[in-house]
Image 1 (tube, rainbow, N blue to C red):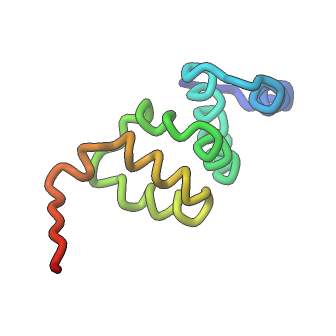
Image 2: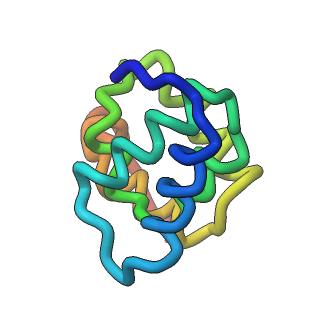
Length: 101
């Protein structure tokens, strides 16, 4: 999405995000796209922290997920990190675990 960065757009994004108890996935994606284009990285992670399911709609490549998860670990809550990982099951596809007793 292409945005021209106007202060009114910033106000609408923040206002919609704060005032709506439940923002649709489409609107949350639009808000996050605005913050990405404006290079407001803390705001991007604010959206991810509130709506972790949004990462599913970002279409990140597996190679990019490591850096992205590292930033989520720094900027967001542990619960958000867990929800993002749950939503990205393909990350755990080859993982095996064993319990030694």
